[in-house]
Image 1 (cartoon, rainbow, N blue to C red):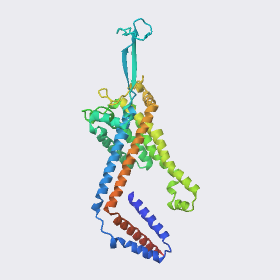
Image 2 (image 1 turned 180 degrees about the vertical axis):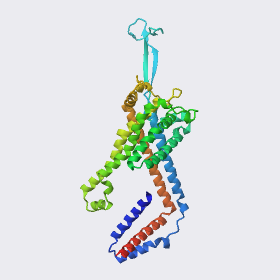
Image 3 (image 1 turned 90 degrees about the vertical axis):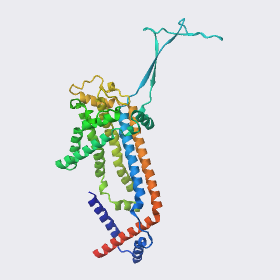
Image 4 (image 1 turned 135 degrees about the horizontal axis):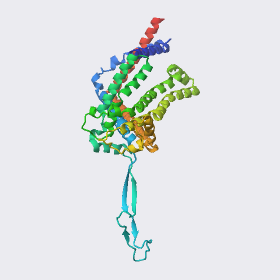
Length: 417
């Protein structure tokens, strides 16, 4: 795919250069020839090893961004999807007065309170303390993960994630090549493979939300007979994943963005056609706006529903590391009854209240902000390293390269004429 793309870009670049230099002044050609020889005359040879610090900086930044994506976007998000509000009830005997009358205070003495007798009929005071969710802050969640499984707990389930996505990608691509049908084949192969690997996905989720287990992962796989309830949420989640990619692309083609030529944009800017530029900007912004809308309105509910249903099927001998109220989802549902899977699918999302949804969206926003910050820091470090390596040499190198490309375009244009 990259070969035709590069050749197309080179072809467009040469064509643009030819159009630009048609009827060029000889003095400008002389200037280009001088620029083309600048690097050979004044520049020192650039050793590829000089770019090693930049490569290392890029690798480290990508590793940190990927780590943030997994820790916050997978582990913490899964915990936020299942965490239920927790309270602590403090039961104390209710204090009563000896004469069953309100206290009458004088200047020098107060009536003594006599606690009620601790028998079955005694009145008690119940105080409920609402606890702040563990996943409300990234720092508190990381602290909780470290208490549960140590420093590496922030990447819990990473091995199963690699296994699942590796199998999913290889199998779906192979099946799509066998089926053919282009994008349609890729769509249906993705759905089929997602359903086929649903139990492996559930084990991955269990490894992120449950306390560490000494069992190997293949012994933690839920029996097939108990997995009927995850088929519908798995299918919906797979469709939502594909929709997050397909719908923005469809909007881009519907608005004619792929056919928008760069020269048309430049012409509109040159003639200061503000209305045309505004319309073009709105068309461009419609694509990420569509992707964001689909992610929040379709993908997020599907992901939450799947995770909560998978948490419902956690074996009885395992326990989640955050409070999870199964009764709020199950209610009086009987999974052996026909149609119960659909009712469970609906209830899994309805039981995820508004405050929990906002908390999850904020978590994803924090993840994007952290990734953007790391990317900006890495970019500035790379620029600083380029300057230290030799900004002047690199400037001469690129100036000479651009001049040589322009001269080649002029020469090709001359041969055509």
